Image 1 (cartoon, helix red, strand yellow):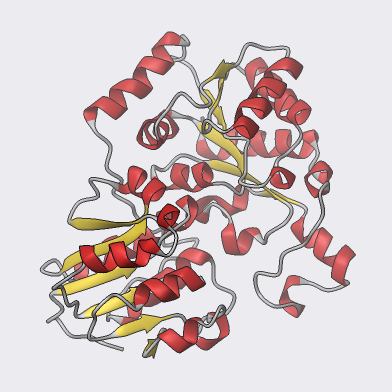
Image 2 (cartoon, one colour):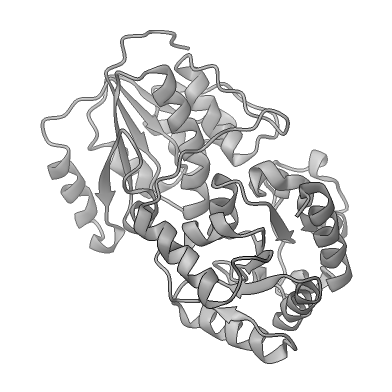
Length: 358
């Protein structure tokens, strides 16, 4: 572990995905506070850069995976002539391993042996200390501590984020609320689509929650990206809903979506990027989980608001608890989200309203 105050240049290698880079920001900004003199260069994907651009004090270098193997030559050209004091290799993926080969750094730090899958360990010269059953964010915090940064977030000691939003982004969000006559009432943002359809809750159940929230005086919005899957899911929710919903799916940039999430009273989402984006701007999230362990991938500061059937599914599929299985063990099935009831989510919404004094 280094406690040196002489670090002048730090390279972060975390290419994707949206939720994971949100977790990584907390660790990167803790490092910035401890080493204010250090120049930080972050190598990440094109989409993720759209969210994080303008992050204070960070230079971004885009790794464009659409270039195929050409992405590595492109990265090498962009980094030509640079040597970093340290590389923080924060991604267990083979393409990240290959990317690390074109980064010139005096020290190359990766995950501990237990998490070093996909040959990750072969590309490392130093490893962070092992952790017992960490959340993804806690794993990134281990990199900060390896550099001597006193960063130990927990459910009681919350990490902080400074996410860049322009005045234009903020104005866009406020304009959407004004157009929906929602400036003087509570707002619920549904971000219903995960990256895989099997992780999505049923549209008729989202609709039922939207109707319930509307009956409590909430204005309900549906947010998401422009993919056909997301557009169809939004259309299906609106079809089943009795109340009037505002459909913003495919109508926002990532920055505009972040600004909208910041304005929201509460967000409901499965394990998807916008759930973790909402955490970074302090908006309560009700996470819906069936396939992955919310203790590992849940909305970090709002894990106590998760509605989940994951642990029940572990018992059904493996006959064991999370403690008896490899950490991060996923469960499989196309219909697991159906086991999350409308009543359970309604009860959690009531709890969030009471606890957050919405």
